[in-house]
Length: 188
Image 1 (tube, helix red, strand yellow):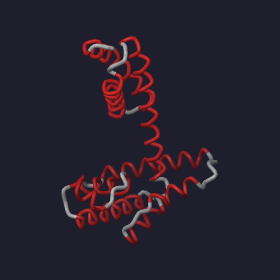
Image 2: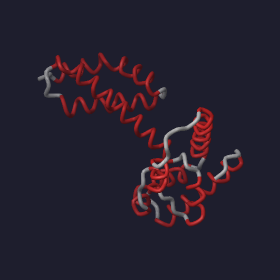
Image 3: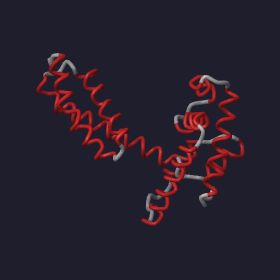
């Protein structure tokens, strides 16, 4: 079993290399820092009772799995926002059905030209930029409702406001996103 000092020394010794490796993989310093910190916490919580000699291999596996989890979350994020027609639906009745979006993506044949891939990538970047431009409360409500899939009551509790405020913030966010994206030439 590794002592507390051995575990601490090990984590200090791998911290910078793990961070550089993660930055190289995900190309985002903030995400890389989160990945490394999550990996260190997992090692400490789940494997502190292992011998010190096993820590390097365990940590590498944990870091690898945490990085893969990050990529999976990013893939899901891109998939959710790839079908822009759902924003139009959300604007009409205030509802956004994530399952319909994912089902539409899953039924596609998976073949896509390089031109379409680049176009989709640019569109996704425009969407991401537009979401970042939303006022903080609208962005928070929008992401909780449509990205985190929280219901109105859960979102209201998390934001510390009424359910009506959540609905208002979400509606305004969808309208602002729609207006911004249409102005950039992205058809909904």
